[in-house]
Image 1 (cartoon, one colour):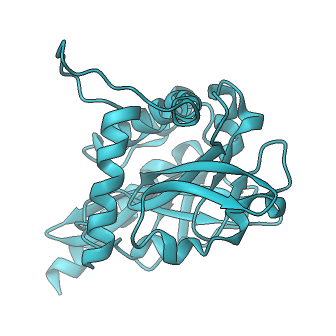
Image 2 (cartoon, rainbow, N blue to C red):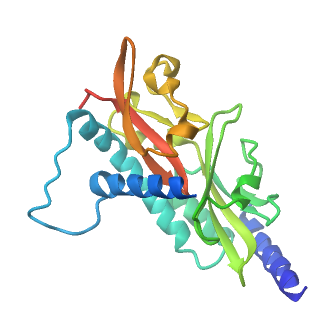
Length: 258
């Protein structure tokens, strides 16, 4: 009872401060995606004169389009992970200035209810309850993610949980529309981005007319983290995954395009 009371008190204080300004298959697939990611997109800071990486034309073009977006996402992930406690109003406002492509920040209670937020009335109606669920193999303190479609367009929620004695006290949720990251892509019209359930961006093409549309992504992502999609009378497309808070996001472009 005392632990529960302490957790409730911490949650109340966090809201008050913030409102002052307003499975094995999955594990192996994750490891495979991480290898590709660390090899081609966000390479570890080591130097070797023998470490030459040669990519095919289409894969090289896709990596170049994704790289700057990945850098922004990585900065956000590191900033969230570095927080020792939920931010107060001033810190939350500064966080949003640091990442101007974010839609907002929100405090979420341990039962998934929206508390204080910036802006005070979020434009999109989001469901925060999925943030209470851990991704397979994730630890309670790991970043979490939910990708949702709304009448105003899709939204990504990346969340930082705060715990006290292993009890969830509050979740800080950072939300953004993926389209806000498109200026960081060299040629966004050539890019297709989606999660297993939600199409985030289709570039200058009709997604239904691409070979990606025929793939059951929930099933595909259980065993693969990259590949080439092809179909009759369709240009092949190369795709890779980038995990956000344990959720795989697919990036794709034409296999023959550099």
